[in-house]
Image 1 (cartoon, rainbow, N blue to C red):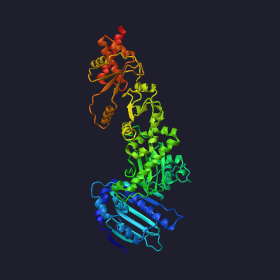
Image 2 (image 1 turned 30 degrees about the horizontal axis):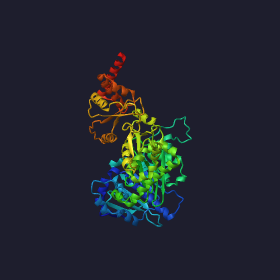
Image 3 (image 1 turned 135 degrees about the vertical axis):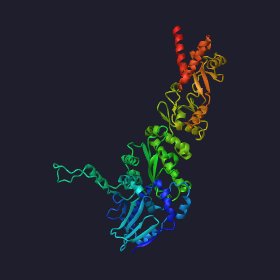
Image 4 (image 1 turned 60 degrees about the vertical axis):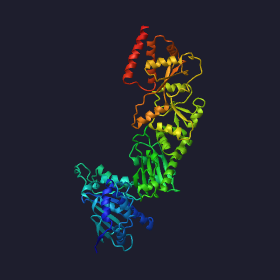
Length: 626
């Protein structure tokens, strides 16, 4: 007997909401229907235990019929169960759903409010359920609806246990009658579900040319492509036993790399990984991979896939995964995560915060473990991972507290030190200062001065380093620690000598100020350890950082360059310049020496470069005449 009815009093309100707000993720209906099939199989296993037959879900693409079918041989449904689970829309709260999702922000609705089966109407103008319960003597049921609001239900003709859901695809959604497109969706959302999922393609095959008379007609004529298609159809779309669910002891290095390549469709191998395998206090499985991180990680494409019982939920859920870990790649499966609520709830959920903190600790433990047991290997990773580690320290104080002993500083000589090791090596030479370079090649002259004095110079040449230095100086508890660029300080380069002490400071200051037409220029006389170096130009460390930081954030304030000119009184050139009587030649030399000092840290441009070249020619001519 056929019955008719309305599905629920809310359906006329809910269906337009589904179709409108879930449109950007309309392919999610495939995940929902496959998940339902997997659930039916799981329930059957719980009741019947292990069974000899293969329990599976099959997705059939039938373009000629205009249908997409989802078939499982699971528990099936009785007439009463269809009435309960289909005709009475079992939303967790339909009223709350409508109330919470009337605004513009519709992110994260899918799969969170029991929409499940009804997501089928996003792509179909008619949906049929053909089901037979496992229960002895149960009658088959055939259910049909064209809009998700009204239905007909009658006894069906199914003879095998299980359920087939048939979608007659809307004209504008014909993409879901393309087996390649459906496979893409299945691999994305269902690629690691626990139940085998098969894809059956009923698309008409192109006619193949008839075999020639010379062909062996005793063998079937099957092309390589046909053979490949047959083999592909015989394999599940999904991997039912993903690596992250296994015990780390049972996983090989090649399996980790292969999973990485498969998850992220890449030929590159990761640097290393963290296998999360926690049963208490969280039920948490996963693998986080450290990829090769770009120098400044601008546009760095991290991706962490979140699963719930092997069902893909979303990428990069920042409420669950700490922001700085988004530079990593990986998969996290957390069956206890409350995904049936809004993301705003996740932000405030204590369980989620503890979970996030636990993930952070496991990553820190991995870094510390490598540092403590495989120091040399860890150092080979450092150039790739240090932007990520530094960013994590800045963003998360707890992460910094955990890994601060494993932070490395790389010297211009290619050696790696912890902060404490650097202090110990340079004790008595650098005090609480860490000397660094941002461009080792361009600042080579200044770097050499420190290296020749036995002071290690650190390379800090990524965008994150400017923020990292400030954090280490003011936010890390290292009282008095200073990072000083090699062209910002000479306190470690001076010597106590009598050479040049008779040079008149005021005279030299006037000479350079007049020659450079800069009456604000600060000039100092010092005895530098390198007696061949006439002078150095110093720029205030904090002012330079402020300018660079402003430029980084698009606020290029026009600060005038403020230099301190250090004249090396131990240098013969400076002493000779002080004694020179030819004022014109002295002024020429002052300008040239100043530009040479500038060249040691940055290139000359435009008029400054033209003047330098002209002046060089002028000095050469003077020398030639002499």
